[in-house]
Length: 102
Image (cartoon, rainbow, N blue to C red; front, side, top):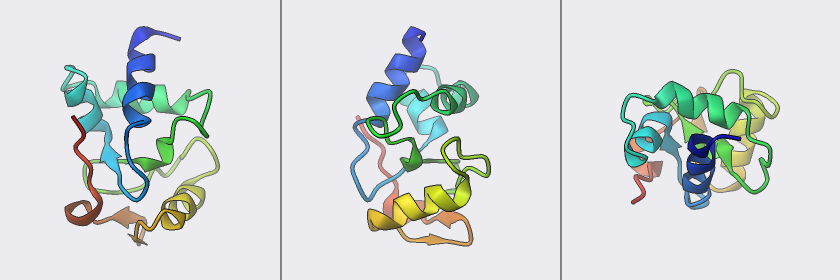
């Protein structure tokens, strides 16, 4: 596992229950503003989905991942709903549930 992957995982661990962040926000927070796809790739390889809550990461429009690595969009939606995040038509309202982080 590379350093960038580790940084992504450590950042995602900070996203609180009931909130989401985006691939781009993570990339910006890590000082690599154009690395949103790399963030997505790192999360797809997430070896510990229980410890690294990658289900809390959505795209810049609030859309869920159609190929969520751990069971598909329906599983991601269910995990978010369990935490109180409202998911409608495969997306989350970022004006309500977005967490920018540090």
